[in-house]
Image (cartoon, rainbow, N blue to C red):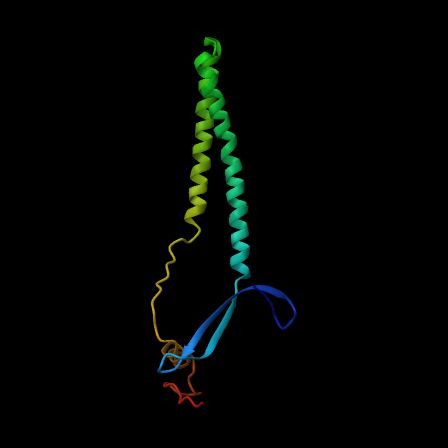
Length: 146
């Protein structure tokens, strides 16, 4: 979903809607929230371009390997060493390329994990308010008033 900041600038947003229910389980209202996911969208586009570029970079040495591997069995004896050397250099180049790709992937921060669990929305909201709302000069949360 695309939303607009007060200054008119548009941004990609993730909209979440949760029902608020009373003691009987009847929906009495809804709580909505949204967050700017423009950075995530940009990173996903960058990832897509990266994968496309990597695919192209891998295809070239693989094509060379296939070419020389196909030609090697029928190569004249005076060219066999050249073909073998070309295979060796291309394999080394491909190995370095794969190492670079793995190095870039290790920098991507895949170690982040989220735990999803059921919970009470009112407890979550109340806990969040008490966590961030302290009256001036106090060490304890203030009393909430409707």
